[in-house]
Amino acid sequence: MESGILIFNRKLRKWVLFSMILLCNFAILFLFLLGRGNFNLPDSWQMQFLAILIANLISSLVIFIIPAKGTFLAFIYMFQLGCKYLMTKPFSQNIWFEFFLLLIMMLEGIHLLSTAELTFLSFILMMTTLLTDHNDTLWGMEPVPRTWELKLSLFILILIIAGLSIIIKIAYDLLIAHKEVINNQKLVIRKLTTANQGLQQYANLAEEKSIINERLKMTREIHDTVGYTLTNLLMMLEASTDLIKTDPVKLEKLLHQALGIIKTGHEDIRQALRVLRNTKLKKSGSIEAIKNLTDIFRESTGVEVRVEYGNLPRALGRNVDHTIYRFLQEGMTNALTHGDAKNIDIHFWLNDNIIHINVEDDGRGSLNIEQGIGLKGMSERLAEVGGTLDYGNTYLGFSLSAKIPWENDD
Image 1 (cartoon, rainbow, N blue to C red):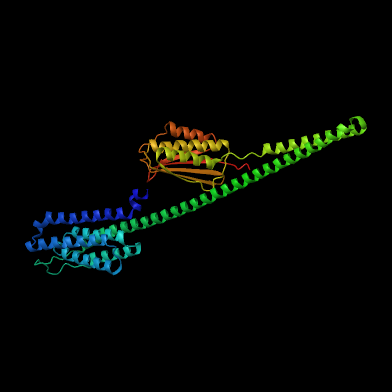
Image 2 (tube, helix red, strand yellow; image 1 turned 60 degrees about the vertical axis):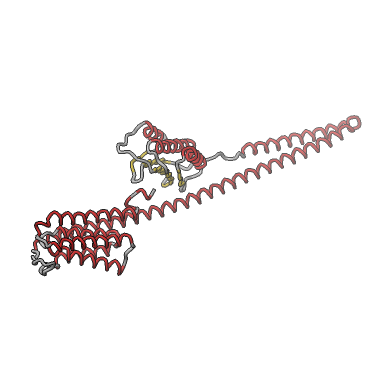
């Protein structure tokens, strides 16, 4: 998705800048063809001018194709300054030839130089506008000195262009730094998500194992109680058959003992069954439900869905779980049907008892966003749990953001 945005795509940005350099060269050629009758140029100079212009353009192409740095780049700039000197000699009274040639060098600097290097280049180019004289005879033409008014006019133009170039360069560097920070944050969130899922899986497995062990323990308790009770009863019944006629008093005592064993065994079995009834395995929580939802959507539509759970708890409560489920369901459906998205990124983060949910896609977005049934339904459903909804276009597509208050009842 990153390749879809010009400012972060260095290769595409390079050729956009080179296209602007081509336009500057065409502007110089247009000025030359338009005014050559007024300049009284010798015929030989016209071909020489075109040859130097082509050589200057080739030098620009070279440094855009070959990564130029250091001495090589300095040599190219010296060559271009020489071309500027030769090409502008006959046009001392027309500053636009020199303006476009200097603008070409500034555009190259935006792409190739750091902010400090671009500032130094700007200073050099501004000084050339003030210090370059046109007092020498060249190409068989009489010199016409440039007035200080024209020099200052050109200086101010280059000063403005240099200031804008430096501002653009600084802004670009800040955007790149901000993008790196965002990427690092996403990486941290991804790692936290993985750790959170791992911990929750471990906790779930540990809890399930504990419950299973408890059930096994209760099963053994029931087995031992039933076995003990039935064995004693069997022995007492066998003994009672011999005491029916011989010792009625002892028989009565034996029957009382059997009754006590039955009561005790019955109570022990009831207690064990009560424990078994209360040791149920926990149902799937929020993360499991979200994973199932996004997996089904991915498989059925072919849209790539990436989910970062951040520090989201395993379960949030029935109402909040249901709200998040419906919010994601509607958000992914809108991204596909209205935006024709191919990628959807979902991010969760819990901060200060507020669940932050962000759903971003790379779809078409919307020039005129209206709250239709889908967005209105999301807003109403979020409002039922005290949540809010924000939405809007991004440089990649469309974004939905929800905030839901949540209190941990555990």
